[in-house]
Image: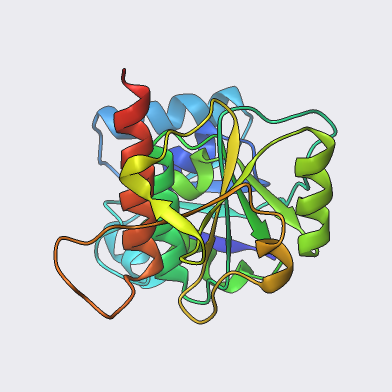
Length: 239
């Protein structure tokens, strides 16, 4: 499947990583700046064809006016499974994400917070990958993402490599601000439409809840929760 990605952030992120096949770079005719030069340089390094179109022609192809004169035709993202070796650092597993904008926002926060790998259930996001990449400000391409077929695959992997599973789950939990994250761990969160599965919850090393500043009966959306957890991890690790 050939997809069209728009804008300098998406185009640069795709070129800087090797997560998908790249078919063509499209640049606005007569436009030159630092970003154009960098994209052209990367395209020539990778032997990717570059074509020049008028502003009007590009606008006809693009879905919005925020493309900045840069487009790339590329395939869908390759979906690697969990590797044979042990991943280190901060890993994150999230299940139940249904909205591409939410996934983009989650990737954006996790990448900024230094996450070493996002583990997702396999599903077909192909038609909305341009939306995800744009919403993530390029992080969907930069962040290491691993795809699993079922939760048992994650449970087996974590046990095999002695990686603790920490859960955002209120049962028998302690406050996020009272917990010290180990060097290597996997944080698991449920998506907006469903929480942590009972099967995965059985394998939790420690359940953690997000402490609020007042008595609130509602749960935060997944992207906000990811940010709160992610940047508490940053705060702890800066020591």
